[in-house]
Structures are given as structure tokens and as C-alpha cells.
Image (cartoon, rainbow over all chains, first blue to last red; front, side, top):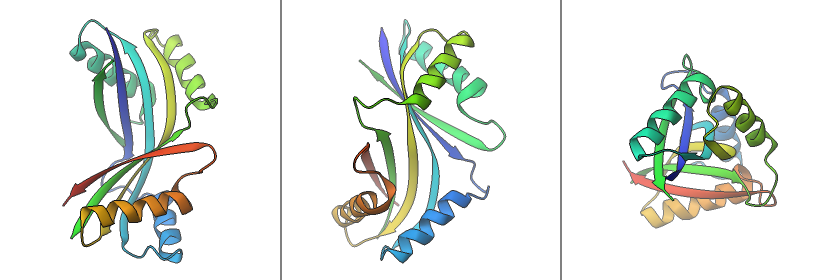
Length: 83
Length: 83
């Protein structure tokens, strides 16, 4: 089976996010003062061949732990879709 | 009302994604040969004060068009959650 996996890698809650702060400031200057709490991370999409959905998720978690996310400063969330 | 909006800004389909290619190559070298079609974009989370969910979505679309995404090279997807 082939699965499409969406990964969201975000700065860990409580850590400063200077990029998010800069974007929030720019949004305010453009007239979007109603926006707050801006956090910026990475969105990663990939296809994974695996026998089951659970296997696909487990393998992508290993990819996150080894390469896609920084375990000290970032958290990640997965969404797995069957293709 | 306050809404939490998740934005996923991805390189437009058909455009080269050199960052995604580099990550796919690195995953293969780490033993994750089952991963393919890797695309890398930005994940943005923000809170928006708006009277309705439709207003929140409409305002965030404007933010994407003006600042958060590059309309020539990127597409974006929104998910709106009530808080």
C-alpha cells in the first residue's frame, strides 16, 4: 500500500519563534491587527510504501526523529492518508 | 470569536522542489528508501479574532495573498478551528 503523509514540524511550545514574531509584526503593519500567536514551522509531504497505515506512521515517526525534526526544539504532528 | 488557523504553504505542483529532493536523497541514505515524492513547505499557525468562521478564513486568505505565500510559486491550504 502507498500512503501520503503530511507532517507539520513546529517550534516547541514555550520556545521563542522569532520568525513567527516577525511575521506577526508585518501582518499588523499590513492592517491585519486581528492576527496573533503566529508560529512558523515546516510542512513536509511524502509518500511511503508500507503494508499498513500503522507501519507507515511508525516509519515516518522514525524519519522525523532521525532527520525531519530537531528533537530538542521542535514537535511534529502526522496525518496519514491512504492513496 | 477566536479561531486557530493552520496554514500549509507548499511549492506549486509541477515546480521543482530542490529542498524536498535533498531530503528525499538523505532519507534514502538513512535507510528510508520507501519514502518518495517529498515536498517541503511552510506550516503557519495563527489565532484570528473574527465574528464568524467564514470571516476568519477570508481574512487569512488575504494574509496569504499579501504576505504568507508567494502567489507565483506556492499554493496554500487552510484549516480553521474554533477555540
